[in-house]
Length: 442
Image (cartoon, rainbow, N blue to C red; front, side):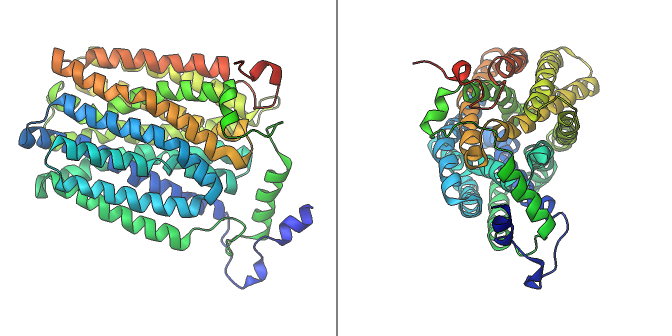
């Protein structure tokens, strides 16, 4: 059986130059998609001050746009994950990137709240396949022992994007106006979609993949099934592991959404930073988060190779530490008077959150087989963004009512720390292990 599988794969005899460690180059596509994806999400935060000034919007309005995106994005996860498992990452990624780029560009022609709400809702629908598709690519191209590190790399796009966005988009804002931000991102995304479709292939179809690397990937798929049962899509909701992933990711996304939507406004209104300086200062926490997220993936990978430590246990242990640390640090930020020190604390907190997101996205591959990774990842993302959608709306309402972001920081810190409870109590073993304990009764 193994010999037949290998013969079906790419061969050095095709005459094409073999690329060594091709899986890591393939991962670059998922990283680029994540960067553009989160630049699109961050655009509203950069444009917000001028939109408020020119269109008489409020902070609650800006928060509502973030909430609408998150709610629609959350519900769109469910069909997106199923479609990715059915149609494959290549086709779904191409369609998603192209359509979300058009949705982003449409923001440039908006003049009313209803138009902005509609365009952000479209963005939520079209961006939904991004992370589940990246998880699918990782499961197809990487052995299980490397998936935490690989996931940390593509998930770092959610930090590189917000880090790159402030200086670049602020410069565009100051030179050409807030509308130009969305046009620029739309064009960038369309170019990425075309490039991905032209160059990406699965391991079975890629003619630059060496035989040895192909055999390693296939051997991992054939020999390391983590699930003892075949579970339907609807049946996944019967398992506590899935609910634990949803609950834990809700805690992560709550605080992440707060910063994605309001960090530039917080720096300007609570810390007195100018618009020009905000572009660079707001990038710092995300740069730190990107580096710490990748480092966290490396630590998890090394930790999981210790005798007696499973990949799932390694992720869970690291996530518990990161969730508690991030919660404490986020609560401290608004009470630190010195701007530099507060940014250091905020940056470390964001790094802990980044470690949690990368570990969370690697977890589906530890509790179900490869064929259902996108479905479980999408369900997890649904839970995270459905609940986390309330974060920017509530923060905006609190800021309008009190003139302060402090209550929102404290609430976000408490919720972030609670992620530890979800992962410890519910995500303890693969689906199918100890079935009498893990299946939730009616």
